[in-house]
Amino acid sequence: MANTSSAKKATRKIEARTAVNKSRRSRMRTFIRKVEEAITSGDHKIAVEALRAAEPELHRAAQKGIVHANLAARKVSRLNSRIKALQA
Image 1 (spheres, helix red, strand yellow):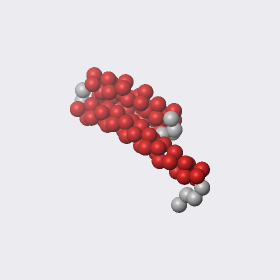
Image 2: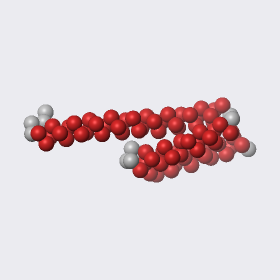
Image 3: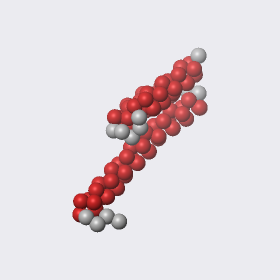
Image 4: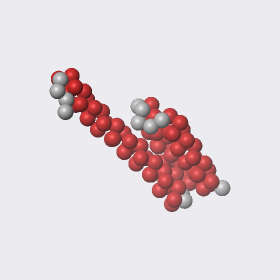
């Protein structure tokens, strides 16, 4: 348990930051899930729109340090290739 006032403040800050990060991660996963569902339904137009909405969310999460930048780029790339396969 924290004894000093600075350690107590640090604990409060960590809890607040954790809550924000959790919210951002959840939001990112929701957008990814919407793209996955659109791909599963087989509707190319809806899938493209969902990916257009999800891509900035993924990159924002990477920018904020929620996920690694390469992970965000990889997910966008893989979702994009799956959507292109739908069109063919």
